[in-house]
Length: 249
View 1: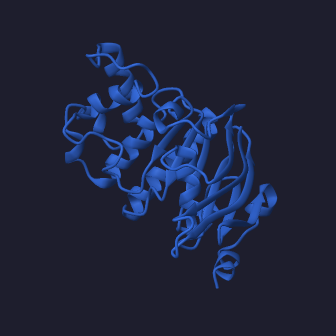
View 2: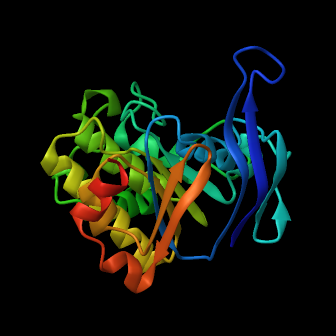
């Protein structure tokens, strides 16, 4: 459960260029929900993800996850609950390390780090099976440097790594914005599979109206730092592209 209580975020507070990115926002997101957030640039959607991740702190309000108030916790202490997939496929991975080494680091994300990343045969087999599920043939290239892969391959692997170790929440900030249509489809279908099969809560920010309609069981529209619309269940499933286009007109 994610419980966001009366969160506000003000940038440059007290200055002439003060901006209220979020204004007294409250949301409850049950475990296992797939929430899609849409909105114009500057509506507050990415700020919300940053506050959940811990890269920014709210001006006021509280963020509670599984009955733990994490409002003041730094990003690394939230990693036991939260993983993140960024817009840029290059983020969140070590380009000079192999696919296998990146997966090992990801598996230790929420644990105390040791001097050795300790790759053994059992771990290699586990990674091979997970990577094979992508259908990209990368399970035969586990020694290949991560930085040599295409954006789509890297983003799909990053998504798998995000749930390599136990996690409750997966944040996705426009994960397909830099990808071609085929790669975008692979990434989104994988996210949907992770949500349905593992019960991991997903919060996705996207500008793709097609993805906003096709994926997730709840849709939030941010506008001017507030939640303008909140639809789930049947209300979301009945939405048409024309509805979303009208909202943005």
